Length: 130
Image (cartoon, rainbow, N blue to C red; front, side, top):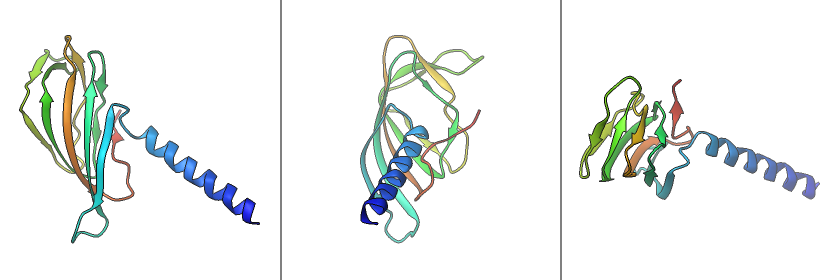
């Protein structure tokens, strides 16, 4: 019984890790995560991300707020739009359930971001919109 329980637990854990990975950005590197004091069911997640030329940030939403700081600016381009510079030092704020992203890094400089998400605990960090 103990072995069966451990196998079942391990399978559930592995499935959860795979599901989380499939809904995450592969360029995102989580730095810290903590419960949001005074707000049950919410958590704060600090991350860095590096998006190389040719990488895309797909159109997506978050179940909470995302604040980002551009550590290293880069030229980005949304489908059907002119390329534009996302400058070093810019800050971004994406509100709950508002679609954002949907662009590709173009040119020869990687885009580097520092992000802080304040989101519903237990929901995927990224929900992609096709």
